[in-house]
Image (tube, helix red, strand yellow):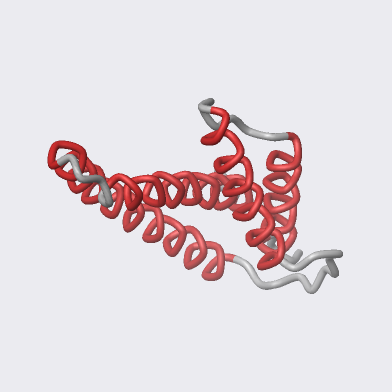
Length: 131
């Protein structure tokens, strides 16, 4: 059974950005004058920091497993993986800020989904075994 490295990695990176956005909001909550809000923020902060650590470890595991099983195929891409990751992060933060002002929950955007798909394809190209 083969692992879809691109899908797994793109999904974890997407989840990591969601965690970072939640942490961003928790930092704002910590600035409150209400002790109950600050206490809730502290609890959420601890949970989210643990979640973020777990996600980063999972990314490391996927990349190390992929590297141990595959070699880089040298395919040229229009954008680097780093650029795609950066664009996805900016898209997530942009949408979050816009939605927070409007008082609505975040939901995937067409652009965000396109970036995730590009990231998945890029990782799959890199991690495909050379025959």
